[in-house]
Image 1 (cartoon, helix red, strand yellow):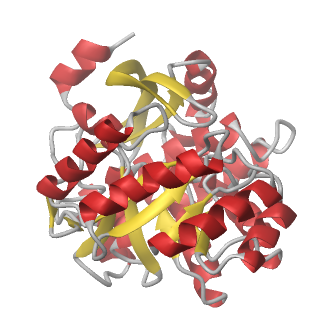
Image 2: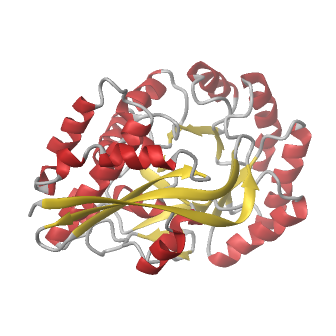
Length: 360
């Protein structure tokens, strides 16, 4: 099997409603869909994204710039391809758009490997489970009223979720507390509840809010301070009893190594796009396991399920519905869990009608 063509398709998927976090104002997710075509008719698929399709052309051009590294090659040599691209991006840098392009190519190669073997990737990686705990992340935003938060929390329960995340980051800590408490009042004590500050606080602010929230029995406090402030993360972690979760903004195993060494968090949250694809995600999972740390994958729900099914220290995946319109397959939630698909490769394929609808 040889890759004959690297093809990219830019699309822009609008959200049902605009949303806000402490640092984001999101109307759509612009994606570059990647297809690696082969001489045996199989096609490997993956995608990367930008909020509101900003600078999407840069992502598209970066991926296409590595066509010479894949066209004419056997996708089973996925590690050789990964290393070749890693070496080539040295002058440009091992963070940012370069790693996003590497992710797209690496993930599409693995999708081909699974399809050629007619096996789901978590089986090829060494399966450890067939379902994974998930939490609702597509709601409970910072701009919503308390009534809206409570209605959406009930909706998540009705959909089968038993875990969900509330965004915080209001100027007044008491307002954040009241909003989270309102959600807790709806879901009850048995449902797992987390908060995400989206990097909006200084350490002292985060500690103050965290101490207020401790009585609500939260499972984790996510990105309490700016992502680059590892010492600030460590300070918050030391001074609070709840778990600190972070890492979605770090790149590759080297960024995760720095978080581990500074004791910046209790739960690592690797993001497939920033981590460098499924190859590097597997290495990060192993690195975390060597330090007795759990991981919970950040967005990219569909394509992270192969990691969730093969990494014993993966405790959950983030359920983000933004990209669901792009796929033929669905992700039903049952009693708080997602089924890890037994379809070949990553287990998800792009919908032709969706591509036509959202193509730029």
